[in-house]
Image (cartoon, rainbow, N blue to C red; front, side, top):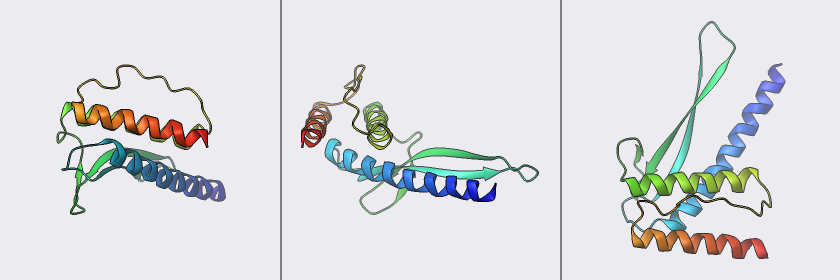
Length: 133
């Protein structure tokens, strides 16, 4: 049982690195503001003292140009939240859905300013072009 748990932890760690790498690439490609360098998903493992069951708590962290990390909650505009949500979904799809040819979008530009709408369109175009190769 311990070997399985260790294997799952290694898998989780590797997938989180992959998701965050993709997330950082997509954020830099898309976000046109100058206050946030990138975003990252942090996962904390908690285990109750009298239980073998672990739970994962995920949070979104903003990374600034001076490498400061700030929890996203309560610090973002509506547009930044929408963009982060969209970029996270793209990163998850990129990580777990190899060669998926379908992406459903429901009003992806809600609350985005013109620069970030253009950044999002260019990012999607670049993703599509890279998939053609």
